[in-house]
Length: 209
Image 1 (cartoon, rainbow, N blue to C red):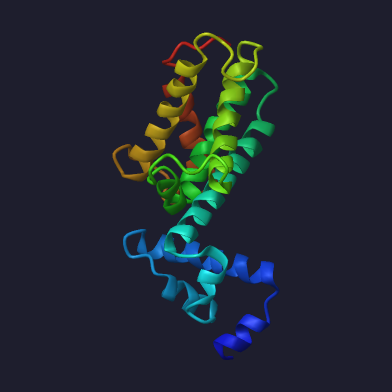
Image 2 (tube, one colour):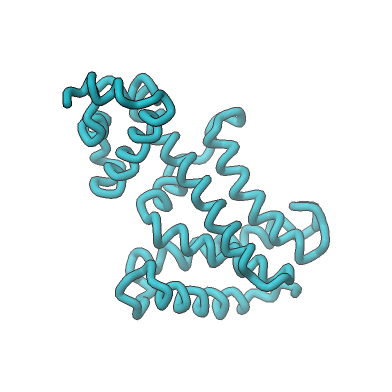
């Protein structure tokens, strides 16, 4: 099937999603430094100009991938929070464990979303996605005090303390500086090992329960 014929077989939204999926695969296999819109188009089997119609240029596609990454991060945090015990502390723990789930299931997106320079337009989809993920964490910390997000006098410092602890664990473990025993990083065994380590490390910081 030719590129034109393949493109015509997609609905507009389907083609955009297919290109974005291909972009994620390209990022995972080759990294950001070698990212190529032409190869993304080739993966989908469409014209090399097709990605530009949906994302503008390489920077636009990278921003869309980062937006997807923040959305997936938020979904992972919400999923683990929902399955946690119904106390503010355990829900915060659940959010952190979801953060680790995202990092190990999506290492390329994890490094992309936190490797891009901060400061997208406040009206951009990427900014809204990043803010939603951040405010989820801020809300989980605020629940410890029964206050609105960032309203407690020490809220900013507590959010940063939580964020740096879980992010540091994710980054160091992904880089091999914190060895984990489980061979498959996405297995139930690996998740249980990370959860237990995260809980031990987190509890060194004295947050109210």
